[in-house]
Every structure is written in C-alpha cells, then in structure tokens.
Length: 205
Ligand SMILES: C[S@@+](CC[C@H](N)C(=O)[O-])C[C@H]1O[C@@H](n2cnc3c(N)ncnc32)[C@H](O)[C@@H]1O
Image (tube, rainbow, N blue to C red; front, top):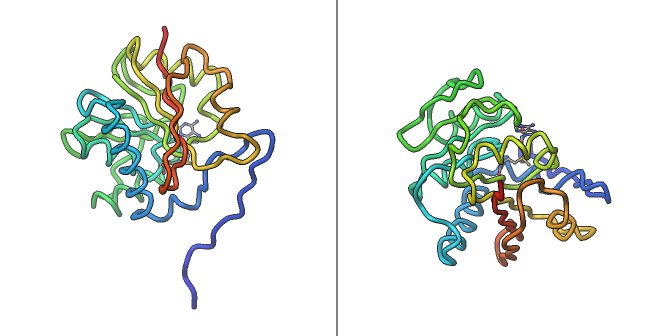
C-alpha cells in the first residue's frame, strides 16, 4: 500500500486564500532545509542578526522556530493548532504533549512554544527584535493581528514573511497590501528553494 501523504491541489485565487503549498508541512526534512536556506540567505546579506528574541507566528510543527533557535535567537513559536505543535514537539524535538495552552512551554533556553491565537499572545510590549511568518497565511494581515505584532515587536524591528506561491501576482499583492504600521523594506526572490519570496517589513510604530 502507498502510505505517502497525497499532495493537496492548491486553491490560489484572486482573493489570496492560500500563500503556501501547505502539504509541505508534512515533510519535516524538506521544510527544515528550506527554512534554514532562507535564514542563511538573510544572514549572508546582513538582513538578519543571529541574536536577540524572535517570534515565530503560526509556527505549525515548529520548523521555523527550531531553525531560528539553532542560529542563536531565543524564539517563541506559537500556533492556534495544539495538535500540530505537539506533533512537532514529539517528532522533531522528542518531547511529548507539552503544549496545552497559551502559557509558553520551555523546550530549551532558546526555544519556547505556546498554543496561542494571533491577537492573544501573552507577551509584553516590545518583547521581540524580529517576527517571522514562514509560509504565511491570510490571517497574518488581519488588522487586529498586525496591531498585536506591532505591539510585540520593538520600534524599528522586523516582520519577515515568506511565501512559495506567486500565482496571480500574489507576491506583488502581498507587498502592496495594507500592513498597518509595517512598511516594506525588501522583497527577495530566492531561487532553488521552495520559499521563493521573502518580504521584510519594518515596524514604524
Ligand atoms: C501555512 S501554515 C505554516 C506553518 C509554519 N509556519 C511552517 O512554515 O511550516 C500556517 C499556520 O498558521 C496557523 N494559524 C492559522 N491561523 C492562525 C492564527 N489566527 N493564529 C495563530 N496561528 C494560526 C495554522 O494552524 C498553521 O499551522
């Protein structure tokens, strides 16, 4: 029997319903490799400082948070979906059923996770130097969520959004969307990895 997960057919329409090939979340090796490749490009171009505190928004199984912690940042990864977080913790980090609520759980001194919904993250104002949304989804620019990210990220800090989709000019439309207090600083195209585009915003609060 073929137990391989079926690749979902993407629905990417003019309403920007999906920005990523979501089924890739089920492939830890590839996802980790691609997230790490993006971070290496940012480091090489001096667009990322490998210290300080980072937020990984919608961390899913936690790939982005883990990759960020490995290069030296202290990371809080959160996701609305407890099941994904706990599956990630058990498969990738080897811990069991640790994440039950929005209270953050420590994996090690660089890595924390919580089951939080954007808009309800239990962290103080200006706690983070940078926030990431790897393989972003449309909830990211709901105005209440952007207001929260702006509150959590220091003034002048960065919000980094990646997508592997550019159908119907998704990237241009993402870059031109209303991002509240965030303004676009860089749009990078990274060839050879699935994350084709990285948009870096600055928090102008
Ligand atoms: C396309 S996946 C990306 C996952 C992860 N960043 C990665 O690179 O594998 C989007 C994630 O956002 C999470 N999500 C959706 N709405 C959310 C919300 N309002 N607050 C927090 N997480 C949310 C989903 O549960 C999902 O894990």
